Image (cartoon, rainbow, N blue to C red; front, side, top):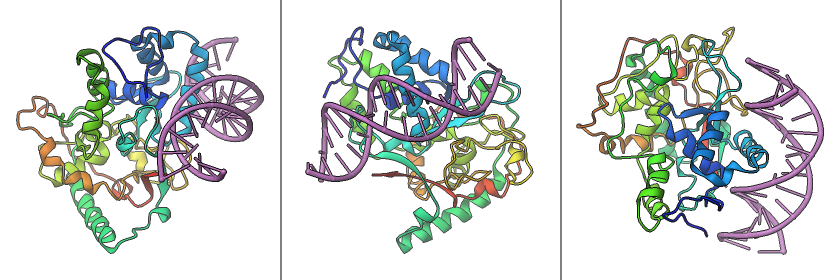
Length: 312
DNA sequence: CAATGTTTAACGAGCA
DNA sequence: TGCTCGTTAAACATTG
């Protein structure tokens, strides 16, 4: 398998799949979401190989965005007109490359319906219900603020201290260019197992994960009142008669996709146990939160419909 | 009209 | 050997 060396891939194809490249691009920006054109730009900027035959690989990339459940489409806000939507990573796609291979995933990430994910073990069910109850309670305490600009979407979200999402550009690009001997592969592999996801996830999905963080007494506040983290009116979360999806729910018609936040996977609680270690008391960005009271809708805390798991 | 997004199909490679 | 994944091509729809 090709591995990234210390050199840039000036003329050879990078050892990453389009899924990896796209995930890198998305993770490289603070908002954890990018329009298609920016994804193109990111890849072309860093991998000269992709400055040629743009029609070919960009078509493939678009195919991947649509085809793979690990990518979710975020509609633009009304005050941010433009072509196309934003693309983000599904919060649970982080272990796709657990085997360390960025050419071929261990397993394909699939969003599944709740009935497909009925808890198979009593302990799972109990855990799920317990977390569900906790989330509903903590959601009431979630705070939010109006976020007029994309650049502020990650406001109020505790920044990671040490943990970096495996897709984060810091983990891929940085090592790729900085670490002698091309350790990007091995480094990412070593960190890909059991990594604490929630910090990055709260960055990308604050509406989903902030409640979990609150549960674990993390010093974090939530962003969004009228608008969710992705600029979609929270108010429209309330299903029925609302204008826009309030949450970055996948636009693609997943069988269980319903208005509102239902994308809290049943194994999310696994992240909770990791949250303390991923929070740094010295994290300088934890004080950037702008909080205000929010009134999460019922669906905001219902994790029962849209589930995501890695399926093979 | 071009960019974006969706879908289908075919093919090769990796893996159990 | 069959299945899965990644890539590529193509057709078509949608959108600004």
